[in-house]
Length: 359
Image 1 (cartoon, one colour):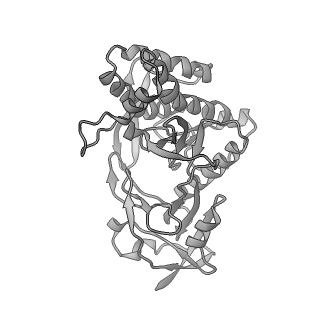
Image 2 (cartoon, one colour):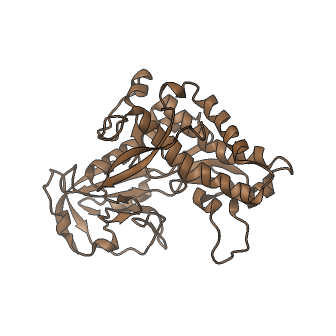
Image 3 (cartoon, one colour):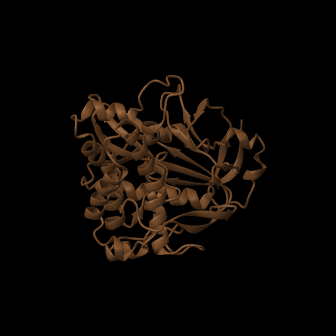
């Protein structure tokens, strides 16, 4: 049984099977998070011209790490559903309003354009290829549909491992080595564990981050939750797989220098209250990549390979970073920044390290 409300539908080259699953001729499927309850009043906002009937249907889903993004299972074509959740999880209230749906779909379109060139062998992404906004196009409740087959699509057999799973321990099998350590032991030569770890596990993250920043003006979020490692059937790491584009910042200056369009209406580097260009670059790399991913991987590595030092790891990463971003000192601050006290979703940025750790 459905009900009518005006919706805005945004597309970024969705797989036809997903289109058939979500969009009908005059019906669309709109999903709300179970914790939002069955009250549809939060959808009843100012309308826009394109009207469809929202269809009520219950899907069986499993929450992913962020809790508001849900993975379907048991269907002919499975996918992820990112929902509007007006509740705080970790630091932020996990809202998904119309302006964020538009930004995510635009970023997905841009990633498709970039990767179609074929010069990013170590990068892939999970498209957020359909967005639906109920009510006002900027403030109305939104839902995003994320595909689970990485693009560019390949014929290789592989599995996807979230980066946080590399350093996590298995609660049901506490004696098992972390997946990071198992991969290193399986793939590296004795005495070359650090080289393999820095080049293959950490290097893929840093090389992709610097390439997107310097060539496309995109500060992609590559922390442990948003990034997966693609591993082939021989347990050889292939590409990173990037997901979740809602908080990606866009650098206007680099894109203008590169002659790239700037269709984005939010998350422009240095144009939001409480930040500036150097601080935003530091948050995107030093904090979200460095503190949330590189540091945790490094500490797990050292726990099982104590013959190496943290400084050795950091120096290896610095070398990779500086090769990919040779003019970083012209943009980044001398220190590194992290999030300070906040009100709602508005944050202040404060100094964390007086000297950079991984650049």
